[in-house]
Image (cartoon, rainbow, N blue to C red):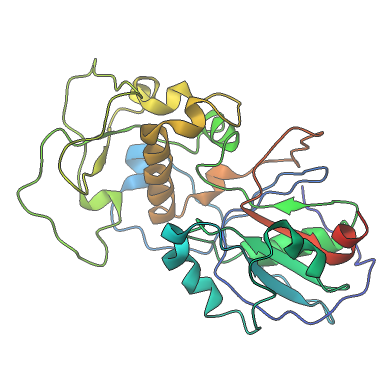
Length: 293
């Protein structure tokens, strides 16, 4: 199931180390996922939710002579705050400013670039090493992309392989909200309490109060009554536009992180796009491929 091959091209020193996400490769465009290191499990989520845990991955050895640079796009002013965490740890000066698509022409030959969009908020520890390793080992892969959450059409596949979980918005505003460091964990909030025949229309607006929570539904079979049941294999449409689908995918990710269950996103074999469209929010490219195209 691995992608192990001898390195067939020149390697240059790695310059960045960023915490990184689930792994997905595209060769034409190819898709694949790798799991993340162990995380503590403060509740019996694996019993209630039927989750599985993968053994820790063996760390990848950095090849000699591979140069990897961060390539962060400034697209929207409202996303600048999420970009800053990446810009602060990339030890290079900005490539250029006010270049739009012309930035691609300024890549330096012999370098690998990890392109990070302005709305990427969390990256698993193994994503960048796996991303770059795949591209180096398989130079015929024009682009290697990350297995991105809330990135149609990937949500459709995440649902079908069991990576998403049933949850609904809370029905009443809580009387007290804490800002504890572990408040992001779904297990800190208990289960959703409501009728077993409840469904949520994806067109319904969110609750009126700010920072409402989504709560885990205890019965897994109710997943067909939740917004993600409307996911389709599409780039646009409701899979892209519905706020409730996006929220449920993100809360599913938080649950999987808490339960060390990111293996649920794993694809057994590379997913080849064959020219179909997929978003390029998080990907690895080789400069020579871009400059020669």
